[in-house]
Image (tube, rainbow, N blue to C red; front, side, top):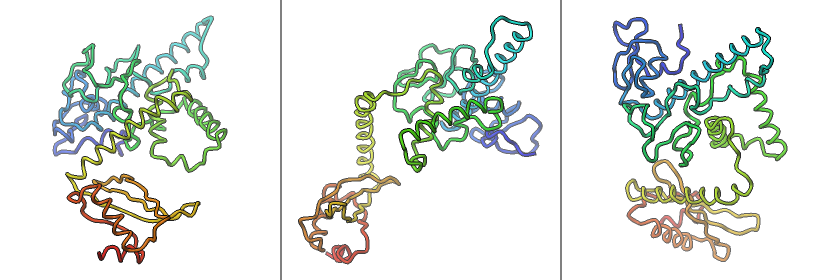
Amino acid sequence: MPKKDEAWKYTEDFIGRQKNQTKCFFCKKINFGGINRFKYHIAGIPGHDIEVCKLQTSEAKRFCYVQLETHEQEKLTKKRQLEELSAIGSHAPTFASASASASTSTSVSCVGEGSSMPPFHPSASASASPSTSTPPSGTITFGPRVRKSRLDSYFVPRSTLGAQPSLEGMGWNKEVHDAARKQICKFWYFCNIPFIVARSPYWQGMVDSITICGAGFKAPTNAELSGPLLLQMVEDMKVELEDHRQSWSQKGCTIMTDGWTDRRNRTLLNFLVSCGGSTMFLKSIDASSHVKNATYLCEAIEEVIQEVGEENVLQVVTDNAASYVAAGKF
């Protein structure tokens, strides 16, 4: 029988395996109990009659934690539903409708009142006690008060399985999900956003981050988007570009150049630097007032090589235009 729970990917089979036994892929420890108890082992949550794993990856730890938190929320939701049904059966004077109940309890929300899950600290060790009242500086907690930090450091990445509840777990709250999709469509169509924008690598990550924040999240205003948030993103990008520059001397880099003509009939030369699997746009030169022959191209490329650092450049890649081929022979 196939194993539906995705957490099984962190286990491995072994000779003599008995029912309800799991072997950790990371620390090779054999544990007793079902897959749900094994998730506490990977998530690094002490107790539950299982030792925590100290060799798991941050991605595996985050994945199992999100699944456990989702499971906790589902249990709380079922408990509320039973209480509401009990109240209705006893002719209680007030009760919440099914749609209202779904809207207040279906999101994968933060750890808060009523949840038995401890706050998640990505940078904390696996053996850390969940009773710690004040998390170390720089750690992020999935709680009502989330510390300000770079978004990518604590939101579930798009490539991580389990960033959203599975279809099997949606069940009764399908109407809520459909309503959320319609709200997205209203925004999309009102702003006349091209459909291809949904292919952006940041689109699903944005949705996941809002889901983690839970109910009560306030969208940034126009003033925030064009002011402090924009300035913060610019500073973050400068830091990333500086990190990219620092890697040039460690790994070496490739200079890529190509020429094209814009709508104003200007001849532009674009220069990019590739290093370690990522590419950075360096600069663009307006060559409209120059003859784009081998001599000029050779001088432009030489200037970029000196800017990047001759000792850091492994190769220069251009297209196969005759002028570029001739420049490579200088």
